[in-house]
Length: 149
Image (cartoon, rainbow, N blue to C red; front, side, top):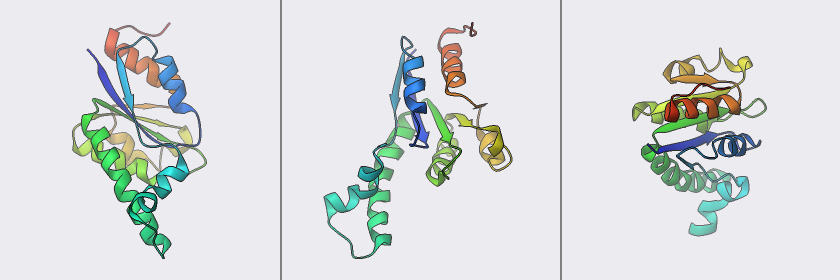
């Protein structure tokens, strides 16, 4: 069984690399958003033309990124949504809600300090992990039935 896993959320740390490296040898296909912050912000104006106002600049980029995000979420078996400590990821909250509406299996990756703020997101998740290693262990269990260690 191959799992399609979409890695959503915070782009300022290496959590994606930790999961991808840790899942080496598992039958997993990973996808996710564009993690180059400048490219993600500027894709709309780079392709469709400049805007005089920042709100329309951001609007174009957000809509183009939504094409990629929707496709990735729709094709995923499992959606991992990371909420980082330093940055607010409103897009991650949207991704979690969209994935839940699609009936996707959701794993939230967040620190304990966000438990209260993310209680509704956590309620939609099938698992809430605090470390990328735990996500790898969940994927390993799902694919092999083996517990860690």
